[in-house]
Length: 435
Ligand SMILES: Cc1cc2nc3c(=O)[nH]c(=O)nc-3n(C[C@H](O)[C@H](O)[C@H](O)COP(=O)(O)OP(=O)(O)OC[C@H]3O[C@@H](n4cnc5c(N)ncnc54)[C@H](O)[C@@H]3O)c2cc1C
Ligand SMILES: *[C@@H]1O[C@H](CO)[C@@H](O)[C@H](O)[C@H]1NC(C)=O
Ligand SMILES: CC(=O)N[C@H]1CO[C@H](CO)[C@@H](O)[C@@H]1O
Image (tube, protein in one colour):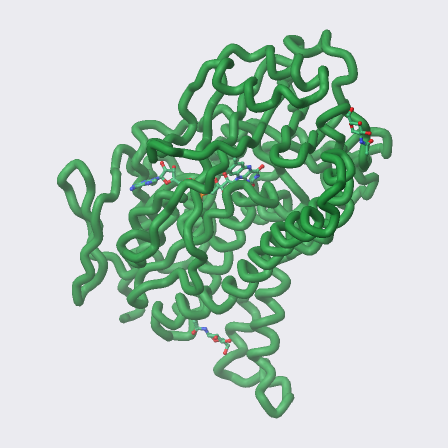
């Protein structure tokens, strides 16, 4: 590619991952960016999203953390962070208070649209083309062509980034054998005014997980006086009709799954007349998320973790960062985009693998506890699970600083195999200062 020709990059999807990709790729010199989003307008579904330490780090990196009032809030040691309770009788299993560390913002949970608005504030107006639903992809010698539902096509592009979420059309094209299926689990979620539940006794002051053997419920006071409820239920889909995401269902479809819970929960669940239903889908784990040297997946399009770890947006941010850095390096090195994609793939795969191992560990823990202690009561079971696994060692996920790890990779590449520091060699000096 000649110096004066810009790299034509297309991003498909403007969710958290796509927006982060926009922000990071705008920082890469010599990129001509196009963004296509299926929605007619950018609006978020009524749900909450957790902002953990790592998410804050990325919001800072993207220059939008200051948009959040919560970013400036520091714990004074008295504000409750998260509790685990016995869902059957409400008994406290564990409790953590918000950190007093002046260097870490409070862990907080906000409405999703706020996250979207903050990211959008860093995106030039008009860059995102709305009402552009990708339906097909064509690979040509001169690049990748995107075909949309409205009959138009765009391209060719030198790089296509599939940030089109769990039902990614980009993924279906790149990995035709990858099929999503219903996991047998459904989430019901809703945000209501806090005053609607204020009269109910024993409402926890912070996030709370209420556990029983097969399901759990998550309650959480949000900012602005709102109250969020998120539940999980095991619901077989005999008719194969579960395809919905965020559809409205009446109260009657929800409360029946949680009759075994304590009174506080039953009273809380009785308040909303309508809920949003999220049937949870999953698919085989992809070892590689790139295709043909010109297509890369990120976020839920690459690894839909269905809300596990409450950090899917953050994983998408990490992906976007690494992909942009790898492409930036390729442009500076004068190497191919295919090489950048390979680097992206090789950098991210071990991280996702480690996440999947945690999930496998959870599944094993639940099975082990069940098989070793068949006579355990529901509540003892819950206690064991929480102690052993669910509240277990996932700290590294939230402490993971992708910018640092990426820099370490660069640094070690600059030191030759003989161990000598080559960073001052003329050819690579420029990289060292601009990385
Ligand atoms: C129940 C549940 C709870 C969760 N809780 C949390 C949480 O607390 N914290 C957290 O960080 N994460 C959470 N997540 C995960 C988080 O929602 C996702 O990981 C995150 O939204 C992924 O962002 P994304 O940009 O990859 O995909 P998405 O948010 O799905 O965005 C994809 C975008 O692509 C667009 N699109 C789709 N198809 C096309 C097409 N064909 N053409 C053009 N555009 C298209 C969509 O309209 C959308 O705007 C949760 C997930 C679930 C299921
Ligand atoms: C660019 O050069 C650096 C330093 O030599 C190297 O580590 C990296 O793998 C190269 N990346 C690409 C995409 O060419
Ligand atoms: C461990 C524990 O406290 N379990 C309790 C959970 O709730 C049930 C039902 O109220 C009690 O019987 C358990 O003792």
